[in-house]
Each structure stands twice: as C-alpha cells, then as structure tokens.
Image (cartoon, rainbow, N blue to C red):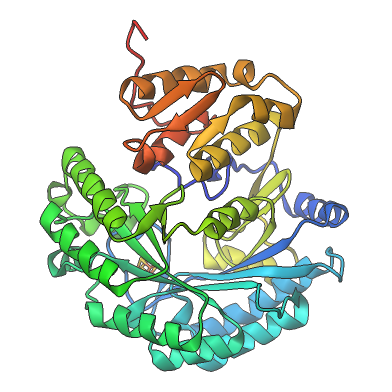
Length: 434
Ligand code: SF4
C-alpha cells in the first residue's frame, strides 16, 4: 500500500513521469512571468549526521562537513540557470530551507547560501516576508538561532516527534525536551514570528500514556503552532525503516485512540485545528489564510529531490546527489520528471486543498470557479466519500461537504477520495443502503 500523501501539492509525485523535462520547465517559468503570481523558493539541504529509522526523506548521511561546499556550488548553478527565465522584478516573499538537516551547514556556509540566493533572486526584505527553516533541535543551539535571525529567518519549524525515550530509542533519535525548550525561549527573545513544533503519531513503542505525556510537555512549551503528522511504515521504499520492528508499531486502534486523546488535549490547551495536520494557539485565522494563499504561489524547488510547482506544471529534480550534480555540471537544469496538469487535475487539486484547509467543500462554488458541474465531474470521489459519511467522518448537506470533528484528523485520508493517481484502496465503503 502507498503512503497517504500529505497533499502539500496535488497531483503528488505519483503522477510525475519521464515525458516532461528541463525544456518544459524552462518554458513554464517564462510563461509564469505573465501571470506574476507570488514567488516562493524551497531549498533542499539533504545532509544529516545520522539516520533516524523512521525517516522517509532520503537524506545524505555523513559526518564530512566539507561535503556541502560542492553542493552549494551546484545549487548556485541551478539558481543561475533558473533565474535566466524569470523576470527580474519578481520578488521572493517566501523562502524555506528544508532537508535533511539544514543546520548541518556551518554558520559561514549558511551566510554564503543566503548571499547567493540574494544575488540571484529578488528576496523580499520587509517584515511580512516569510523565511522558514526546519530545525533538528539536536543540531542547533542559541548561536545558530541568532545567526539565522541575522540572515533574515523569521519562522522556525522544530522536529520534536515524540519525547518518550523508549520511542526515541526505537527511531534512533535521542533528544531531551530541554533542547527544544531552550530554542523556543531564544526564538521568542529574538522576535521570530512563529515557532512550529512537529510531532509524529504512530511511531514504534508509542503508547497512549507516553504520547499523552509528550503532548502535555509540548503544550506547556506553548509554541504558536503544532503539526501532528502520521508515521507511515514503508520499509520497502525507505531503507532506514527496516530497523523498525513492525510488531512495535501501535495498532490502528491504538493510533486512533492517541489521535482522539491528542485532539482533546490540544483543544484543552487552547489549540485550534486549522486544517491539514496543523494546530495554532488561539483562533489564528491568519494561519489558515496563509495556508490557502500558499497554494497560489509559484514554488521553485532548488536542490536534490526538490519539487517545483507552477500553475500547470510540476517537476522534480533527481533523487540522487550524483544525478543532480551531473546535470548541473553539464550546464542544464536538473529536471528529472514532471507532470502537466489537466483541467481534471486542477479541479481535484482545488477540491483537496479546500477540503484540507477549510474542512469543508462547497461543490457549487467549486463548479463556478471552473465553469463546470463539479458534482457530476467528481461523481466517483463523492460516491467514495459516501462510505466515509457512514463512518461519521464527513456529512453531506446539499452541495456542501463538511468534515466532522471525528473526521478532522483523518482529513488526509478523506482527501485521497479525490486523488486520481493513488493506488491505495479506499478504506471506507458505502453501505448498500446509503
Ligand atoms: S528524520 Fe530528519 S534528521 Fe532524521 S535522518 Fe531524516 S531528514 Fe535526517
């Protein structure tokens, strides 16, 4: 069975194929200038000191801190090749460094990368821009945060996962809560706009009691945002997961119990579910709006495995460092695979994004946006959702679908009803009478 996608974008990587290459990407970049949508950059920094067993990100595991030098040079080449096709006036309002472990870079390598990005793109400098970096609390300290703030970063995403030592041992990732607390305090003092903590549910040796204790500690740290992801065990695709003993994974029933408990604790702690896997402290409507607006950006991905997403074209760079670097050494954009979006793709994308961020979907409004009868066009996904309605996860009222409180944390699974590429079986069948 395939992992349930997080639907950061749709169609997901399942749809990517060989028929699209660098030339298509180049043309799409030039075409995107006319639409002048906001521009976002994602930079992938793949290096990690050691492998976590639950990892599904294909990191380059090394202790050689010189390795990023050659990679940064290739990233710079990719920036130059990409920039050639963009209007000089297009401003980058959103920048994200992800990985891997972005802070594997030394402080001077981080400065070098920001300088190169600034030289090649028009990075926004105002307070409202969003510069986000993913942080492994084991690989960053107060000095790192000060440096990042000086470089212009104003948002942090901290990988906490689970604070139970038994779980941490099972995933080869020991990190005490003090590391995270210290970073949150310092980020607050330095004036970072927001700190997000990522937790994962469904990890080996996770129990209701242990995960409750993690949630209580995390809520006491009072981060502005929390994300609650689901672990997906696919050792056939992600070799580090072969270290995880399947019998140590919580059962589906235990995972659901932990989810329900998480919802209770987060609500009691003042966190509001704003769609997808995200919670914000208080009723932060801005966070929800930001999530919606992000989907309308042109996203340029730089680095190995990075995905770029323009209005009607998605492309991805090679999955291996060798293939990525070799393309750039030959002077070409490293596009490896891609997919051109059809009208059907764009309709389903809008349905998935709306359902996941709004937790409801107005079929009449969706049809108006696309000039078609959405109910008729999406008859198959809607009939699948009728099964989930029987399980109490969604309810249909006329032309509107609403995700119920029980369905909220299953919204990703519900969204798979609209996914035309996912081979996963649909878990909720409609009863014969429904
Ligand atoms: S989970 Fe993060 S830190 Fe761990 S190996 Fe994967 S990318 Fe690296």
